[in-house]
Image (cartoon, helix red, strand yellow):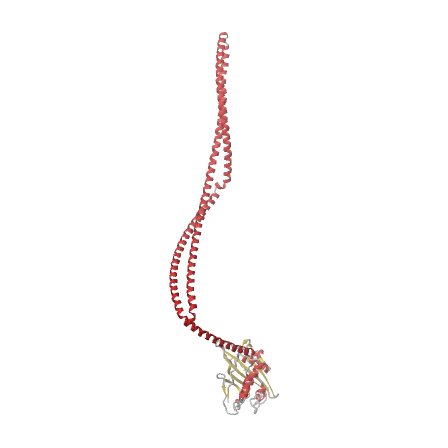
Length: 544
């Protein structure tokens, strides 16, 4: 007997197993039968069946147990429905019979399982194992079942028995987790349909119905086409209304595309005739454009020469700009030096004493005014002294004349007295001596007063000279400050002229670059115009 379970796969799915998505990714193959196993069920102790490409061949004599093996494995391991295990009406198969046939009393635990495998998009192998655990009691004449799903592999990283024998349902929950062990067959079937096939329970029931029908013995001997078609149709999932509507829209679009292709074919035929008529004209246009190309090439060369000249001019402008920048830097350096000298001058005692110098200047002005006033008074005093000396001279002359006249009179009188009284001569001589000395004393006192006046005048003149010398020093220092200010002004003026020269050079460079850009843009526009117009006129030829 040959059993060929159909390939099982999963087109799409979002359910998870142990928190991992079971949906097939892009490039992943479908799940296929890989292994199956029976542990301590019926007459099997432990048996593992390997599938080749999803297929397995069971060979043996009649009554060897091929049908019973298939009943225990498929599709029972896919839905856990113990009521549909029997494949034919001749022999009824139940879980209690499988677990107690040939066994003398006691309790017995066994497992049947199926393993699926596929290759993921990244080349790794993925596995899905589902199975049913069975516990039977000979005394109670009752068999119970539990179900499990897992991504682990029996005999590789999952053991269904330990030292005490096959695992009970509680022990299996400890090993796999409570969420992967089911008590109800309906829950188990829904999980397998979702995880393995990506189907809802209703669609999965249709697939299982087909599998049960194909499992019947001698199914190929009495195949009715109508019945087979109905069975296959029922097993297929219903078409999505939106998908049907999309297919209809696609057919409508194909019809529209066909009409559009016909219109374009007619247009292509018309354009072919137009292209043939247009050939001579295109040749003439091509010749004209060739002439235009030659002209454009010459213009391009001229523009290149202009660009080279502009580059040379730009280089000259940049050189002048560098020179202007150098001059500006030098001027700024000179200005900084002048600023430093000015700061030094401002820190000097002379600048700090500027207010004092101003005060001295004012004081010197006042002293000069006083000196001028004193000079005027001196001149007036000199005039008065001259007038006094003249009056004194006149008085001395008059006094001398008077004295001489008195002397003559005294002499006459003395002579008369001598003649009359000799004792009177001495007194008369003393009196005359006194008269002779009196004018000299008056002159001495006058001269002393004049000397004192001259000394005062000389002292005032010396004070005026000192003030004038101080005033000269102040004026010299103010002249030095004015000279430094003038040098600073000249340096600033030079810096302004250097900045103006630099700005002029920069404007010249910008103008040169602008002219070069304009010439290059004009050349590019000419080339683009030449390329676009012939391309538009040659497009019918290319359409042929």
